[in-house]
Amino acid sequence: MERRSSQIWQGPARAPHRSLLRSLGLGPGDADRPLIGIANSYNELIPGHIHLRSLAEQVKFGVWQGGGVPLEFNTIGVCDGIAMNHAGMNFSLVSRETVADSIEIMVQGHALDGLVLLTNCDKIVPGMVMGAARLDTPVVVLSGGPMLAGDFRGRKISLVNVFEAVGAYFNGAMDADELEEVESCSCPTCGSCAGLFTANSMSCLTEVLGLSLPGDAATPAPYSARLTLARATGRQAVQVAREGWGARRFLTPASLRNALALDAALGCSTNTVLHIKAIAHEAGVDLPLESINEVAARTPHLVSLAPAGPAHMEDLYRAGGIMAVLKRLAEGGLVDGDTPTVSGVTLAEQYADAHVADAEMIRPLNNPHHATGGLAVLFGNLAPRGAVVKESAVLPGMLRHRGPARVFDSEGAVMAAIEAGGIEPGCVVVIRYVGPKGGPGMPEMLSPTSALAGAGLDGSVALVTDGRFSGASRGASIGHVAPEAADGGPIALVKDGDVIAVDIPARRLDVELSEDELTRRRAAWRGPERVLTGVLGRYVAQVLGAETGAVLGEPARG
Image (tube, rainbow, N blue to C red; front, side, top):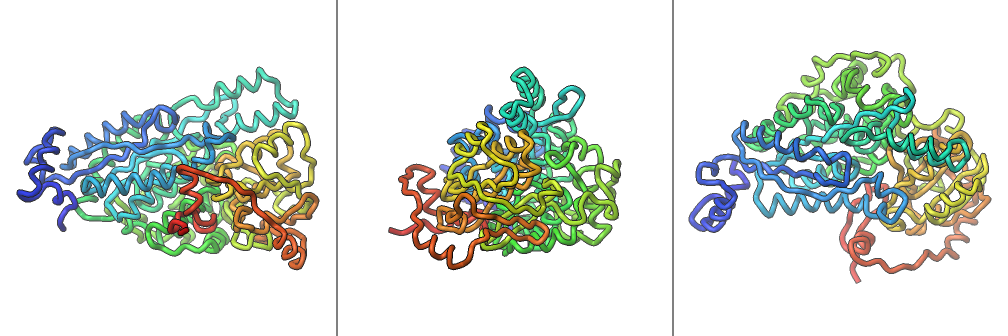
């Protein structure tokens, strides 16, 4: 098979190209070596990325060892924690598409034979994988790994505890000195946030998809084992490129259903629904929302990590990591072990030697935390095209809830109400006009969910939104409501006092209004008018609904 890089190496007409390559220090002896791009999301703004320079050097060493030529370039990245609860959050999901586009541009523009995706954090992992899937280019993924948990008075904590501490402070349950103490010790090392939030959720799913080497998801960022893994990743990227194993070889209906099974067993972030749908879209695989419920219905929730439980990624690592979880699932025939991996062996061959070192951390199939998986997709007259909830992080008493709506048209408005003590127990908080178009960019509602939890309201108040949630959110937090308010979805028609019924076991989300009343309100509805320019304007013109994964469609025509 002819390598892509022959376009810039071979023949007299490529003398100018070779001249430019010589200026990089390459010569004729390198022409037979695969050109391996190292897409590095390093920047000095994100804790999950600050150490990626050192990992990149190890990857390069591995690529040279494997007989390839490493060529590093960078992509952008947004820290969702820093972008939270201000205008920056409008750009978070948008950045996923920019990351994917940058992968496409760099690979095509420079005729790269293969890629190492050196990544971490929420939108960068799926964005990079989406770009590789779009091109079907040979690829191996290496994450920066999770942060170690912090220690607060003998208790392990992570970033979510700081967000919830804000709610406790507003509620008078914590003073300023204690808030500062929590703030100072929750993020003690480099790496993606320590719990099973979106970044780590996506790294876990990347490993089961067969796109990364075993151990990639759970090995903590500061551990030397990650340096060893980086060198191995570089070597294997050369082999994958030589074999011509494009990303779509590993992104199949079977592997994507494996990812859904692992998602259910771990209780991953609700954001994974958006990202798995978007990755499937780029790979040309149909993955209906309903399949999430189908897989979750037969897959027990085996691992309880923050925010649903007290454990963190470092605990999962010590218990055996993702391969140990897959081995548990295989015992019940819940994964397809025949799917290929970038290691060159099947998934079953990868987890065959895995060992569960802690049976409480990775529970057996007959003793799960919950009989069914962590995520659920709800439908009903409030969400005709679906809504998503992290069922594993909902208190038992809130799995079914019925209450009057408190409607807000922005995140800022609900935060002001929470701070003022204006949210009554028993209600259903509705935050709308924060979807893919309405946000724009479908901002995360971590601050409201954390403030409600910190104020002790997560056991009596549900939150429904056409926005999305951080993987750190817990409680009866139902997001991705589709159609969104900006498209005139039913959530746009809800008024204060309307009764909303949440029934997670029945997979239902309804507002108790007749169809005639909804029709009357729809006829009178007028959405807010605004003019957006720049990247957000282009995004709104193209983005599709949350039920699609918020992927981009064709630009709107005038």
